[in-house]
Image (tube, rainbow over all chains, first blue to last red; front, side, top):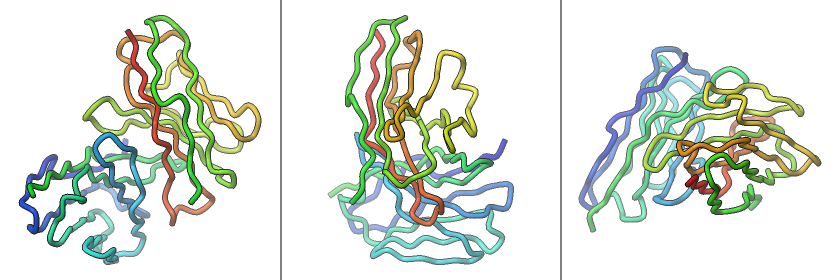
Length: 110
Length: 114
């Protein structure tokens, strides 16, 4: 079935350092969504990317969709302790079934 | 901001017992989902529900599981005979006609089977 690979699984940074997580699919995607889950919390929708090569920014977060629509990245500039959590990329399968990456858990040292 | 509400927040049950997890999705949403997440692991799809019927289900969603939308507002997940491995956080999510706003998740029900 359709799958999405996400790397790295864990990332530990010093506050102020940048952070990037990557998602890859073997098939062309119609869209990709990103969610954040704080420790002990529930997934919260961040953004959806639809267009080839699309770049969207939310403050210090930059989301990119690859030209071939097979990969995506989330980059956080100058991490803060509030960025701690697990970031998931999610793709839509048939019947709007959501297929989740394994997530990248970000830890930030103050 | 509209919320998806899940009750109870924590349920402890004995192995073999039936449990019903309840969700109130956002009122004008059309797509409803149940997911589960074993502590520290990935989010696993269980079932999607649209137009009053199951549109997709995973291999996890076997005969022990069922979903209902009994009254047009609630969306329930029933596990008929719980097993130890059913212990997990169960999330309900709902989505509108379009996907641009993503899906809204409830805060989850932590199910502990003892």
